[in-house]
Each structure stands twice: as C-alpha cells, then as structure tokens.
Length: 141
Image 1: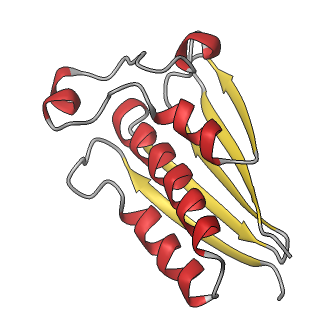
Image 2: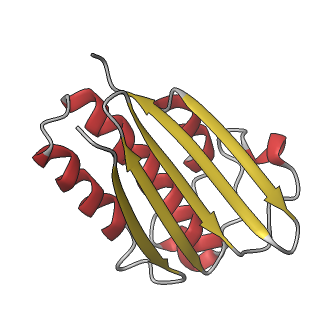
C-alpha cells in the first residue's frame, strides 16, 4: 500500500457537526480493511482532537497519513494554545464553556484519551498561536 493522505477541515464552534471528520476517516480505514482495533483507536484519537478544535480553538485542520505500518494523525489549530499541558493532560480538567458542557462535551477526557489510545502522542503548543497534536497508531503486520 502506498501512503494515503487525507485532509479534513474542522469548523469551530459547531458542536452539531463535530465528529464529521473522524467519521469520514473511520469509513476510509474500514474500506482499507485495517484491523478493527486499529480503526477504533484511530477514530477515538481523531474524534477527541476534533472536538477539542471545535470547542477550544474555533476549528482547525486534521491531516491523516496512512502507511502500511502506521496511521499518523496531525491536528492543527490557530487557537489560544494550551497554557499548562501537564494540567490539560489530567483526567477531568477542562476549560470548556457552559454551552459545550450542557451538550455533554468538555468532560476533560480529550487529551488523556488521545494519549491512552495512541502509540505515540506529541503536543506542540504556543500561547496565542495555536496547538498541534500529533498521534501515531501502529498497524500490526
């Protein structure tokens, strides 16, 4: 298999459409016949990152590269950045607003779930400039 590259724009603030990019990626992974566990883990990581971009950063972009041995998901936004990554990685910590919480989002599990379900996770954030979260999901051979 050659490298497959997918790009998904993520609209900010639209919690009704949130999850659309992760659903599209999941369908592609299924069509490729990847193992169900790999699809599940990649979909969770993508969904959590997508929701974070919608709630905290007024959107962004997700780029997915699928190679024979791994899936690389790079989610980039131009939001406010994360002031304290260590704190943001704590389960239950959230800066989500009231509207997001009323709709069932903002439970503070986004980044911890991404870390839990990925093989590697990297966060690059700059205050006032944005955040890039990159995850790798290995595909067993």
